[in-house]
Amino acid sequence: MGHMTIREKLEQWEKEYLSPYATLSMNSKGRERDEEQCDIRPVFQRDRDRILHSKSFRRLKDKTQVFLTPEGDHYRTRLTHTLEVSQNARTIAKALRMNEDLVEAIALGHDLGHTPFGHAGERALNRVCPFGFEHNVQSVRTVEKLEKNGQGLNLTWEVRDGILNHQTDSMPSTLEGKIVRLSDKIAYIHHDMDDAIRGGILTEADVPGEIGDVIGYTTGERLDHFIHDIVTTSFGKNDIHMSQPVAEAMQKLRRFMFERVYQNPEAKSEEGKAEMLIETLYHHYMKHIDVLPADFLRMLEQGEPRERIVCDYIGAMTDRFAIATYEELYIPKSWHG
Image 1 (cartoon, rainbow, N blue to C red):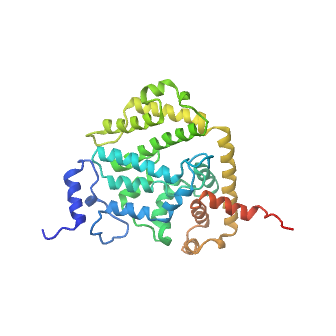
Image 2: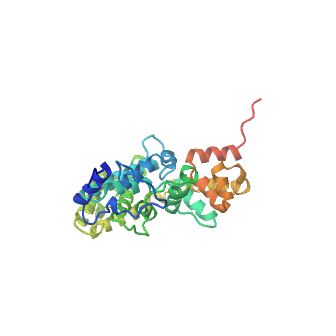
Image 3: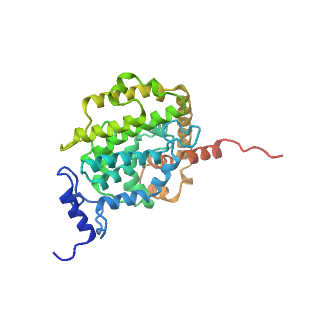
């Protein structure tokens, strides 16, 4: 057989060790543009590295998760959310002998297209853009087209499929994608609850007993319970899911969070301001598209619609940059006598 590369040995190991339901690197449907393989990294590991080294990944550290930026300095950002999703997903994947590299690549890439100001920013762009705006679709557009000065990262089909379908209303084609999809839900509930308790909006005692009895009375207990439940329920099966009672308790917890946290009037009024800011920037750049960076103008020349390009530009902004840009455009600087 001649000399095997390190990559080929790793692919062989996957074949021998991973579950029959796992996605093997050697069976990937490949990339949009063919590339020579790396001699030491299988395809999904290479995708993970590309995502980690991308600009949009670095920007996640300056995008907040839910309440815009709460007081204190240990609140979550999109970056910490992404790492929490990745860690939950890798724990599950390892226990089920799934492809941990694929899981990690999908998890690290799943929110790359998220707007500034979380879902408030997404809602605003979705309202003003005639093509609509969904962050999961934008994440795929980010890795396929926007990254690397318009060349994209050229990721494998499986990673893009997992990123596109991490939402509640769709389903990934691989079990690894399904693991990330559930890990994302768990991470959301876990850290939003944790942040709400730290922020004094809730206490552990507020969580209804019928939920606590099933999945635990503290955020830590619940996270542990969710992960164990997914592993136990999915073990040896060609699917990834929670047991019925735990899935129901999670739905109840989500509803509770919506009533008590997400619909909290203070959080809501801040979100309203964020939406207005994003819409104002959109209308501004639609009028003055010529001030956009060269990469964006090149897409315009290639025939991409200006509405989409303006969304690409605003969608990629960090919270801080969006606020600074708005201030520069609309807030008068103080006069100095």
